[in-house]
Image (cartoon, rainbow, N blue to C red; front, side):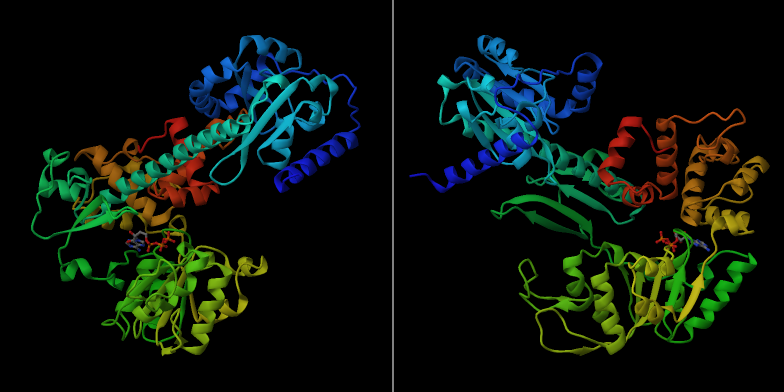
Length: 588
Ligand SMILES: Nc1ncnc2c1ncn2[C@@H]1O[C@H](COP(=O)(O)OP(=O)(O)OP(=O)(O)O)[C@@H](O)[C@H]1O
């Protein structure tokens, strides 16, 4: 009697044979003998360098048993080309005759039913033995293949073990599966290490500006990292040494699944002074240009009302600064100002984030329950940043509360009346988002109340006044900027607006070391320097030059915020990080 598994595999085989028949192949045909050689195979190998390196490590462990049992182990890319092979030299010679060698392609449509082709097609581990092969010339083989996927489930290739049919062994398929799993684990580990590195890099950059002392400890309570603020307290030499509790530091421990201490972080638990806790006010909004003054006046008048406010403007134009100023100038100034980054809410957590949840409402929920942003902002102001990126499901939930003025925490049956003033902000064109079906028109009209569009820095006539104020904030006296540097500042287009200006000035004052700031200290691309601008001879920049330029520009305008820069470039964070490494792009 056939087992279910066997029946299924038999079906898989039958379907493969049918496909081969439909391709117009006949079992007695000579097998296609095209093979990639020279530059073409070198290109494929270069493209797959990473996975081949890992496969070498995996195959190394199996090499002896594969050789002794007269087999070959192969790595095949996602398109069916063999890219690495190890095994018994005797069998390898015979195998080469049927092209079980680097450069040959074993897709079903070329080589008929075979383990590699079927595993690629069906994305499952499979054995193809003797006469199960479509072409008669392959009947002397017994082959087992298992697919390899990356962390997103995308097929990367196949591991295959082949031998003469008389060397059939029931465990060969398990061996192929184990090798594929091991290879997959190595690849996923590498990806997660890279992710970890990115997080560390981001932490490094935020730690620069984060004034709160922060220390990371290993499981033995030794200091493995500390930001500048913490180093000032514990000293540089403390890294690597045991952390002796310092007064005012709270240690929070991270446990693994077995409740073993894994890592800890020590954060200085200091109470923020009134000045540090203070939100921005209209006095903090620097500028004298008529457009900005007009927007500031409009916002000041809006602060006296309870109407919703919608702040529009490019990234870094001061939308959050305006939102806080509106709150502090309003009658709600003594109540909370709560900010929510709408683009960062995962779809599944929308309700709990906005409305909170009761204790034990869902798996993973804190046992004490949690207060949602609406409740936290009760009687105060809720600032909905990046509203244009809010997922549609969250938009529906938000609209409901704005209409009804009540919330129901997840897992609760009780309604709570909520009274908040909403200020929303986005750098997206909401009318276009509505047209594209990504933003609800009814929500737009509810949020719009008073709409204030902030000017981009390039459209402002008061850039030098801003420069003075921003340098003053860093305790640098004015004037310290040469004429040519001022000209350079005026000419630049400032895609990252005031945030970018601030970061360029911080870099410049650092580079100038107390001397007047000259154009050489301003690390911005002059418009004419752009490799994207065709010069008079019409030279087109190379793809690499264009990429480096775009990446640098995105990093500069987001102050090296990798997530924001990747979003500007419309690529993933991991890809951005890889390119930064590949092109050797540095901070300055
Ligand atoms: N008129 C201004 N005067 C002084 N500083 C300003 C002004 N406008 C913006 N800034 C500063 O520029 C930086 C960016 O401002 P803010 O975060 O408010 O911009 P945003 O428009 O909300 O940006 P994003 O859309 O990227 O969130 C902040 O450090 C802010 O203090």
